[in-house]
Amino acid sequence: MVDIFRYPKRRLKKLIKEGEYDEAIELGKSLESKYSDDHDFMFIMGSVYFIVEDPKKALPYFEKSFQLDNSDVETLTLKTNVHLALEEKDKAIDCCKRILKLQPKNFEAQELLDKLENL
Image 1: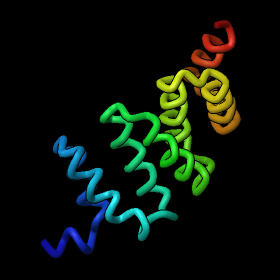
Image 2: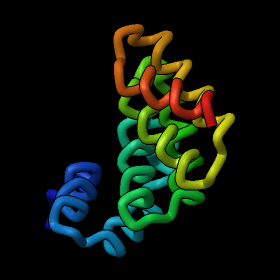
Image 3: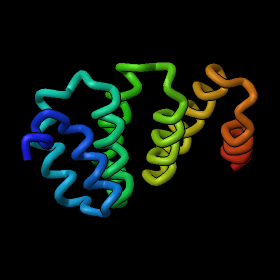
Image 4: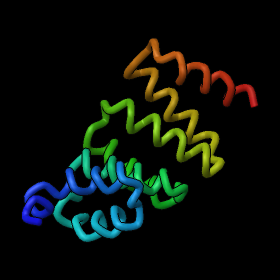
C-alpha cells in the first residue's frame, strides 16, 4: 500500500490500464493540487476523461498539459480529438496546424486539416 503514496502516477496509470476509470478519476482528483504543474499527470487525467467520453472535462487537462509542454504532439492530437467531439471545428483546425508546425510530415494531421478545411 505504501507504493500508492510513493508513486501515485504509476497507480493512476495502473487503474486506467485495468479499466478502473471511476477509481482513477477519484484518485486523480485527490492528487490534482499536488500535480497541477505536472505535464504527465495532466495528460493522464485528460486521457481518462476522454476514455470515459467526457470531452468537456478532458479539455482543460489537455490544455494545461500542452501549456506545460508545448512540443508534445500526442497531447495536441488528443486535444484535436476533444475539439472534434465537442464540434469545435476551428479549434480542431488550429490544433492540426500546431501539430504540423511541430511535425511538418505528420500525414494524419495534414489529412484531417484538409478534410476540416473543406467542410
